[in-house]
Image 1 (cartoon, rainbow, N blue to C red):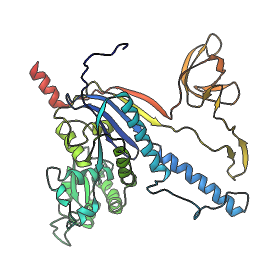
Image 2: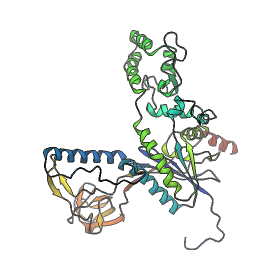
Image 3: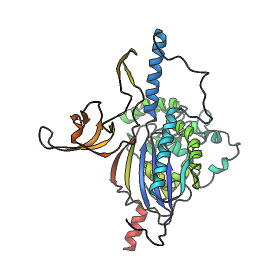
Image 4: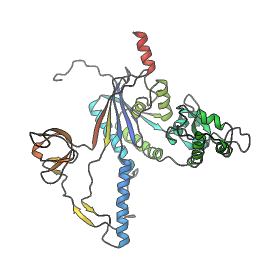
Length: 417
């Protein structure tokens, strides 16, 4: 640790990203050995940002309607830069870029791989558009099924998993070769995921015919499907909120990563799933990150990976005036966020020599502008606190050892033994 190693050869490390709406998988993989050096999942706070902005907008609107003191409307006097994103998607991108820069400080990264290309519904519904051939190769079917699994929450759309069958198949709502009525197409708006029991029960019946058969049945499971099928028909053309958030940020994230100067590889969601299935790995955000891109090694070793759970909690709020539900001021926060060199969110340890809370306590503190901070639900004087870590906008936890390995790698290891 104190001397420089002579002629040290650094092995190439690659940072892999699987961006998502609620969480982003991060992994650092050794391209030479296939070992996952680091794994983590960053949970975003985009929904919280949007909820708080909506609450502020509602509060200002209520004050305008009552003709009380308010901030004037701003529309034409706003100047927005090209490529500006709303605060909610911007927070997701900022979280990812922050951790990419941290990994660059900690690891000798030589390249970055990120999942960029998502399912393009326009290409699937209008095959004459150029570029559709990319979905007709080895990855054909992975893009569409991944979209359907995400849309129907990885459950059978008909029985919601009550049949006990975990194998999900792609099912045509309007059958391709019906006994009666019009034939369906292969468009995504005509596809759902269903378990084998529901798939075989429906067969080549139209949705209305199948509902009549289910209503005539006396079994409880079939009655459950009767309630779910109308919901499926309504859900077919509903947009995916999370998928829309990812699609709105993926190119902006790609451009910012490209500006870092490292070689950047872009992969598709179908390629990620293809690699994961090929390596016999389970579904998880960080495992998806390990499998991103065409340059994924033939063998991946994730046995030693300790997954770091990272929750984005923000850096506090800028609001200095608290209001009641009617919008009238009831309290004012000091301009400074620190007090006695501490701020809310710092990790600290308190040692009480005696009294009701005698012992050692550790956790995040909540700062009040008087010598009485909150730690684990009770008040603590700052003289008992020892600061362990400054708040950086994130909270951390470890899942421990991954406990996950590829069955194929286990078989090879047993054969070698």
